[in-house]
Length: 120
Ligand SMILES: [Zn+2]
Image (tube, rainbow, N blue to C red; front, side, top):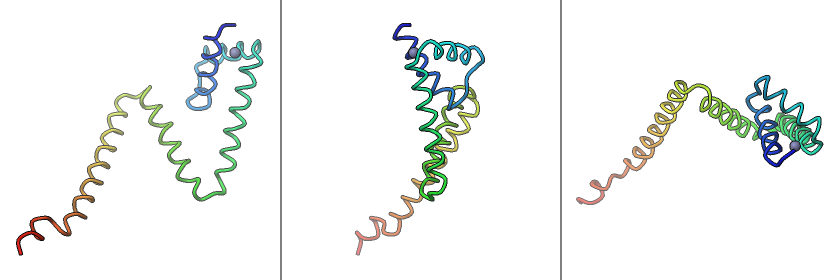
């Protein structure tokens, strides 16, 4: 059991919760955790922490924002790895959103443009 396989197991534990594993990855991780208490414990703790977060976040209104951000991040990660075409769509949406923010910023400044306050 080398350091690299522990790192790999750690990565797979996170990946399993976020985007799922292939059968081969799942089998490898299961086999590793049968021999490795440390990684099995890590998987258990990670799972528990995530459950705790989900349970705790539900009754809190301000949890909504972070849950949404979390989902968006997960989705973005998923797209980054699996769906390059849809990623382009998301980037386009982000670009449009940024453009809208810039436009709003500009129109707010536009209430008192420089050229108006200079002349008189
Ligand atoms: Zn391990």
